[in-house]
Length: 497
Ligand code: HEM
Image 1 (cartoon, rainbow, N blue to C red):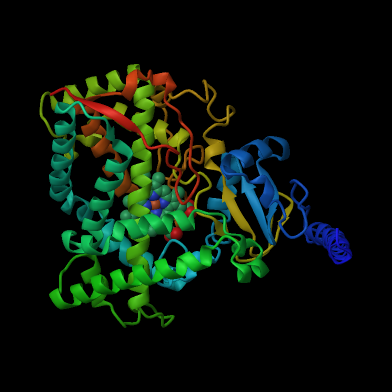
Image 2 (cartoon, rainbow, N blue to C red):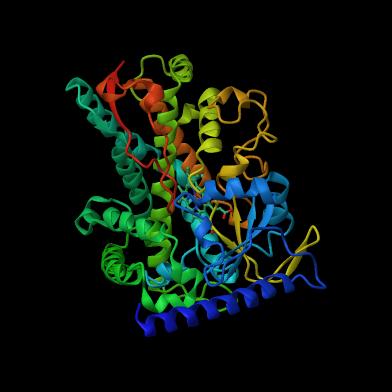
């Protein structure tokens, strides 16, 4: 080895040791006089505990919590992070001290995309976020707004069923993951943008898919800021190009709405354009509108599609549950060829199947990260301001102390006579989060998931290709913005009506 390389490595080793000592001391000293430091694995210099996350961070953290407990500390690069893995601790963060933990960390990718921190999901807690959330709640998520889109959902469901029926007649194998992504994408675009055909020319859903891929990567720049300049993962470069394309498409959406003066969601947002939104003086500008549109599209499509994909996978693996659900659907819909949205509340077993799917396959296994806005001591442990909080609901869903009967088994019957619902009050099951940041699309998401799942199961039997038996179907996850299957689900529909 050349002497210069040896010198370089020696200097690096000395520096690393120095930083390690500094880092270790600083990570312990915060608690001094204020509270204990939380238990957790020892962080390495610079990267902290980033190396332990692996490709499925929720699973790595689940195993780690068995050693360090339901409230543990890790360090992601320079970011102090608390990992929560039990219902009582989740309640402390998301209910008791929700006001302290209701903000979101800044994320590099989103800063360069249509100023996405002007939307809802990654906007810091405060008057701006409150105003935007209020507008969205009123214009998209009230029961009457959701209901007003029922006829269009029905029409889309009929086309969807027709295309599956054709595949069944031709005895084709269908990539149902892709089809579910398409129908959910279309339903969301229709609600957010109005008549969707025009926007197909911009390939908006393809761009959103690309965005979710990039945003799903653990970006070193978010945790080790000085590495941001080197763009080691190439994220900054690809985000710039994608950002330009998305901006172009969203600007066209806005111009189109300004011309036609439609009274859909974007149309309503535009009536507020350049107006003051609250006494704080926040303005609804074009960037706000673009960011809100994007948040709604990302929030609405991936989540429901992934939930459906897991639900169908579990039903195929559990023919007993599939049959029981088909019997319930028959008892309500008889031989009607399309399930009616109004009848969904009557379907108790369907509701249990969806709850069980979300217990084992929450699409946001660590929720969306929160960030604390001030120092706080919880249960005697000191948590500094700007700590990140990851609530591992994937781990809570697999905790045998919370779910005593065969925790790993897909068994909707566990919800018979159970009062645990999905509304964010029962911290054993919070797939939509809880507290101020609770998912605003919860009701819409549940209707969409139940409607499509009921239709898939009522009208079709499902077979795996190439004689594969149900228990051979893999259930490997792919961690990103949401948690879909790693491999697309390919199945043969058999029309049964
Ligand atoms: C099965 C369907 C869905 C699931 C499982 C889901 C799950 C979640 C979760 C876990 C959060 C974070 C909550 C927290 O931090 O405590 C969230 C936030 C959010 N979701 Fe959903 N979601 C679904 C459907 C939807 C739909 C249909 C929309 C909109 C069309 C939507 C829009 C949003 C938005 C905008 C946020 C950010 C809220 C904020 O930060 O204030 N979601 N969702």
